[in-house]
Image 1: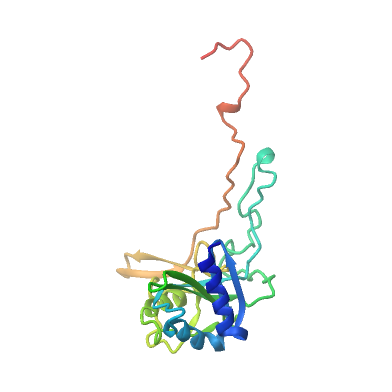
Image 2 (image 1 turned 135 degrees about the vertical axis):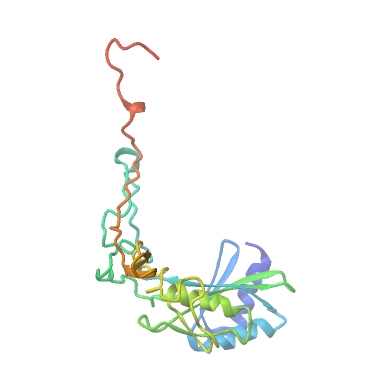
Length: 239
């Protein structure tokens, strides 16, 4: 950990005090968490205060914490028995159309927006995280008036995670189709999707229909059953 990173963390704690829910230094980086109501005030100060001078917003990422700390990989016994991915088809990402969502096991809110900031003047980076208070309708304020580049970043997080950025002037999908159903980066979104499209020769146009692909459970094995592991027959000539 460099002194500069630690100094940034201490300066953040000094300036924002109770507005910071967390202030963590890890892997040479600073990550702070703020409440939804404090996001715009904190971001404006981070941009305009010369002690911080975070002039650039590098990216905004959505995060779905509904399956945080859970895994469908079983690897502890991998050497002796092999391992499987998605053994339980009801785990997040293995759901089919119409399946009940997996119950969230974490006590924190489900959705968060994470802002990656860069100060060219001070040669420093900062990560800011804010949780949406409502899991059913996640809403956080738009920072587009602070960093105009947030326009497309917020549209991307809305498209993929369904996070609504209040105050955004044109919050539309940006990566998926206009008729796309759901938000594909949510943990409960099926890997096979909800609908598929194909060209209908009778209607002479592309149509949408319920997905016809069955989810497949992949089982990569550590121990393979092939000729490399067969015992040679008695009396067989060496090759």
